[in-house]
Length: 290
Image (cartoon, rainbow, N blue to C red; front, side, top):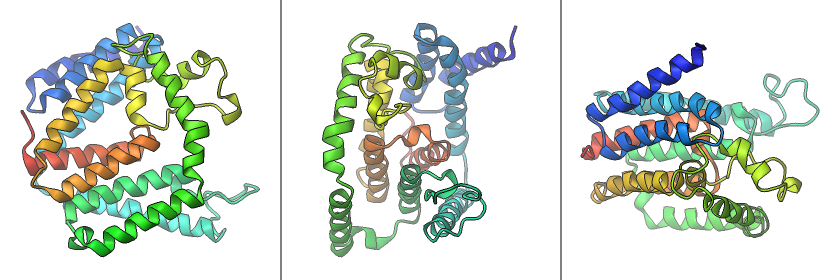
């Protein structure tokens, strides 16, 4: 028996064992549904290889909820933000002779050398930092006005609205159509990067290969169906309800949720780890286990 089969079996066992550990009931449901999704997947080999990552994230979340001192987590995330910012500055001034060495054009994007992924990393990191440090200026009117103005300038400068109408909206519409074929369980965990392009019959080939949906909510719908999306949304709602008296946690949650609408932080390793830390910290703060 190949090694990955043993890994899948052990991960499945741990998925069912999640029923007996002290975590939110929606997280338990995700652990079980993810394993079932592998058997019903349109590309089961890929799903079984991705499932251990899901289980690893769930158990990391569980162990982090038991953490007493969060200073080390904050220091790691803040250092990661500074580290990426350092590389971004070097790349902006074309002085990155480590990661950009030997290439013909300057690439700006931090350690991933991808600007969009860097933006997600900055947003997700700041969401955790705001939730943890609770800076008072975040709630001030001048900060909110500057933030709204900056967003509007960014949207206008990058022609984001036109890009959405011409590119992303048609892709998201196609994802919704494909979901109707497997409406309840989806196409399978981790299936999007291999299934969407052939299923869409090359409709978006002029835009390149869509390995991610650039919308994590819709990608969950595509891969795990309406049942999976409803479970995830159930967890989000259970979290938000318990945050009603925690404005900084709410601000961080909104930042992450909005980034998930236009990027794919759940499919970036560093962003995923920070999101897990953020959710575990929220659970610690509001005692969301139910």
